[in-house]
Length: 268
Image (cartoon, rainbow, N blue to C red; front, top):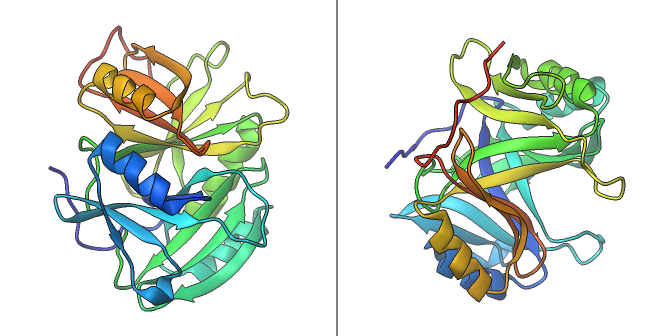
């Protein structure tokens, strides 16, 4: 089981959490679907819940802010050596800091921002909470990708903020997709998808993918729990995959990367 006990390198998707109306309902839903052990946080954490797998932190569940109208969503957080310095890079690259950097007790410092294409994301400067301690495992998050209608602007922005380099894996005509790599790194840590089918009323968004050892069993359980199927299940060169909306409307993906069909597109 891949685990980690230290802070993630800057620019790595290091944590995910969902903001919902009913955290108790979300606790029961994800515990049943993904096998999470969801624990309460200290009272000063405002009801935030932390999910774990095999004793390692996997994801968070929080209640929506009462003074902010928003749908139930999953949020991707990127690791930062300094949240304040990354905030400056965000605004300098044309993004917007929606919630300025603030300390979360002694666990970290964070901010919420939007990129120039409209996608919301978080930034996490680790202190006692390092981010995800388990990943690429059944029930844990395994991939994060941006769906945007402004592919070029998104690539320019995240390169300016985090120094990403890109590897194109689509043909650039029918399928435009790039993976991104940290400065000096060799492994891809996420992706950006030119989502030409994104409806005008749906903003650009970061999609969180959780790993499943059996997509069809996960689909059956998700249906039993009252989920809505957005896409799939589909076979692909990257795995058998499924996109769902949870009980409260939050969208996420499930993928079994061990079950692949066909050859992946050539990289360029």
